[in-house]
Image (cartoon, rainbow, N blue to C red; front, side, top):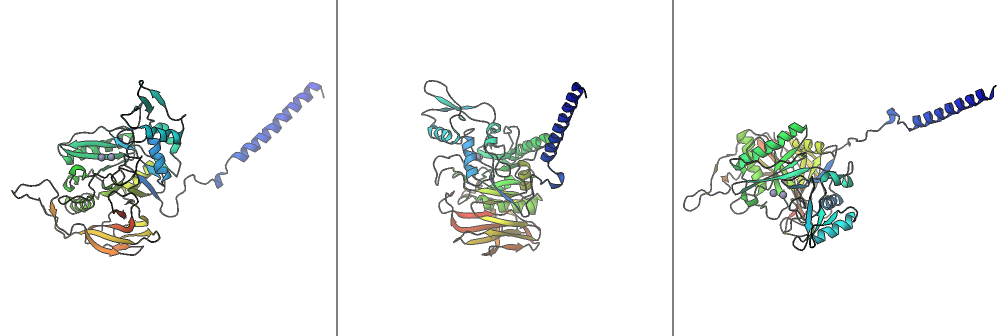
Length: 439
Ligand SMILES: [Zn+2]
Ligand SMILES: [Zn+2]
């Protein structure tokens, strides 16, 4: 065989061998389709994700950096968080001053200690003032998010007022900031802003939710302002110490307001249910105690297979969540026939469940409160005491209520004997609230 031909044959043989080896290796690295496991498996039982949808950072009037706050929630067992700053999404270029006046030295030191000096961007504005850059959500979220473990959902507190009444609403899973729009009443202010969220949802093909915040803050919103089709959720508990969750002598608590709203919507206005939201509304992260606006006071547990923003919003839209300040529930079943669940007990703690309902035959009439000169007062109207009545109580760890068909709705509140470690108000015990069931 001529030498040239032998060389050519040898070269061809070696190419064939390499191809065979490479081909075999490639085949070996290809997953066998028959054996592929889905990346996201649906758990056999219900999965609850713990989250908070109302928190403030230095992007508005909170006193810590967004990464630090997300890190706090993540390291305290939360699965999802919305940083909901006032009328802003955390995006764009923003530098904050750090000087004697702003009192941010502690925050900056903790930020550098936790994330490292290479991560923290600093510059001098002038001889006396240093500046630190606030990172946008898009820039830091990948540092903290983990599939199936921790999720950040963009959101905003649409912060507005009608006359002297604050009207604040949180919009969750937004893409663009929503600037507050005016209405001609408290109720209309709620409606026009909720419509703006819906419009963005439609335009962007998103799933979003929006809820009315702290109705008793400056006594801004009353039960009668919440009789609109657009409203689907409101805060029945907010951890901010000045929001008057429990009302006063002439204003009902936010929880009682929920009963009035539910009774009027279902019994009179033929409107859908409103779900109860529970949030922190945290602003302060450097000192902890009663009177401070701290994280960790109240949260929601959402029942859905996937930890994604869309999955969370879809589940909340269907009422598949409960609110808590510490009590853990399992297997919440909410149907036209039954409201039942299991309580995950803690050693040494006792639990009492109240089933709270308004019956279809209860009068929904109300009268305004009048002062001694006959002037109508701008406080809670007087309703029949049977609105939001305790219709059953249970000491069981698996409480259940069978609906008779005579209820407009029934909801459950679990009250524990355990004191909250950092309560909204001194003496608060840990509780949980289910969403209402209707016959
Ligand atoms: Zn607010
Ligand atoms: Zn707030």
